[in-house]
Image (tube, rainbow, N blue to C red; front, side, top):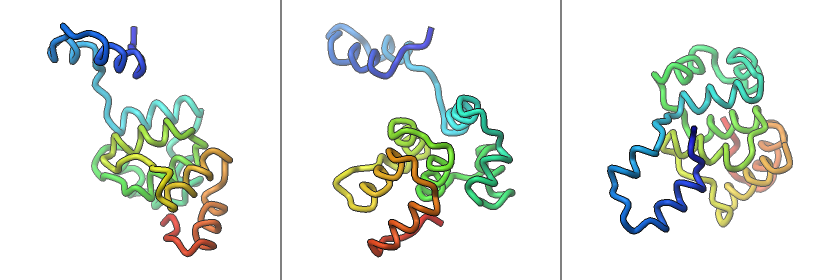
Length: 138
């Protein structure tokens, strides 16, 4: 049985006798590629469909899927928008790719969070970013 993030945090906070070794036995191994594949299955989207939805270069996309390339923050946000991920799923993808979380006190991130929450397309998100003279997703 897979333990939830909330349950893990509760264990870390409440169990004073918990050793690091005991904790790590409960932490599943997950990486960016595995999590992305899980999201594709959940959303019932193939890799080729995602490539079309994001307009990312085919070869580069497959290198991301195979773990050969580490995607930029912008590429991950494009993937998140295309898959209509929620904020938690997007932040998980960003974290697993070492691209940090979206932080609502940063104007750029606030717009991305708004776009995710309101299911905006990549094009619509870029229009909003451009309107506020912020870098578009490329």
